[in-house]
Image 1 (cartoon, helix red, strand yellow):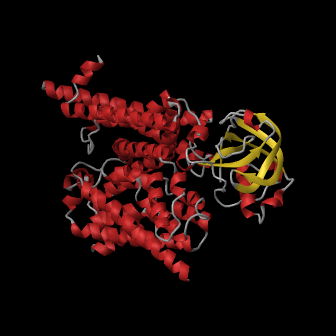
Image 2 (cartoon, rainbow over the protein chains, first blue to last red):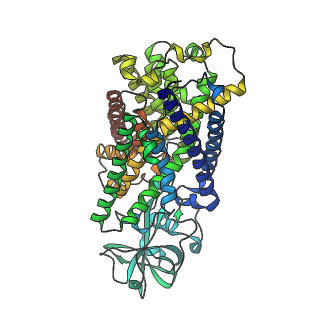
Image 3 (cartoon, each protein chain N blue to C red):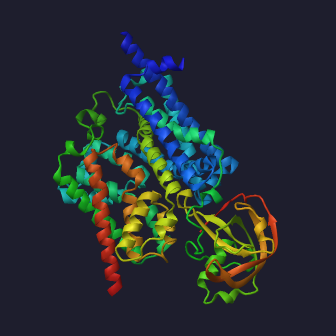
Length: 245
Length: 344
């Protein structure tokens, strides 16, 4: 065996180990996402089973790759179509690198960059009783209603984060949530206008639980149902930060 | 130690690694620039990018894995002869067959490319492979179900089937007829007689050995195609961090412009075909029906991710045609649909 040949074999060997490592790493990453609940930061919980399928397949491919690097002789007649090189290994390792280096977070106020929508997303499902409705449910109710005044006096109890724009009244803000149909690729911010006695005291991005009553009012240039807050409480980000249409 | 192992890497590989380092630097610089103009903290913008990227990746990667395993199984268990025997010989027939092949190999747009490449290397006609590539992400039972659940049987559901089939067959025939095989496909997808392992001289291996081989191939396939998925997801996440969908949404509701915008949105968002119907529901009130149908028929054919994956199969000129032809044809179909619905 010449020196060049030897060096090449050594390279191939190292790449084979790197492949197994990445495949197992991805399997472990998906498993950890499921176990810690961080998966909810990325995809609709309806598709959580997919991540499970992904983890299983990664482990199966990792085991195969490991087996093949441990028994190289058995695969003399290996049909190598691909020449996996270090640059490919590095690119495929990129998601793992991001996952390790950057703490897992959901999309919040800093991801809002084009304003928060007052329009609902998706089709209306079953109508829930007023106090159980979330921000998305309310926007759907408003969408269906003939007049904004229809809801005057109805009690509201919703959770979201504070979003402010210069056109909002001083004691008002939007209480916003991201909706997610599939994954964060389609995450979309929606919100309800709130007016509170000490509304200017809350910071943009704070998660709040707001209880109050609806009243059709002018807000940021629109005339629409606005929540007049009776009680506001600062809360932790919900375990499932997104609303699913 | 690291330096010495870096030296042991071949010089072309070294150039590629330096290129990658430059790309990573460019990525960070773009995010820093975005943070600067938006007056935001760099770490926060980086965090939003990471969330968007990992979200797209985590949602797409199981489908890529399923596609890779399917590709490995085709390679080890199906002989080219078997495929050829069942499929029509002439170009149009092959394209029509390819458009319906998704019903046999149910894959979405992340899984379809490795399977199509495997079919090409097994010697299937170009027209068949292209029609399969464009139609399969929609023409499969899972996506039928999700479209039906979201829209029921109506103009959107029927329009999506008709437009997808027409565009896939026509583009398949066009690309299949104007270029030679070798001018269309990259060498890796060309295959050849020596690739057909069913004709190897030694005795037929056991199912266990074949399964092992299939998973081994699937692993390589994952790396080979995964890098394009990752590049595409980085681009899609970057686009979304830089140009939010809200700004796209604010544009146009005319019969033509709305279709153009929805197709660009579909291209940029790169959402999986299995769930894009639920996403499209969000736009039903804002956009024309033709725009919704074009979003649903164009999106699964081509998006940022799949364009990059195409570059692993086709020569660069063909990739351009594969993006532009479906774009123009879907635009025509969507506009026509708007006009017909307006007068119906």
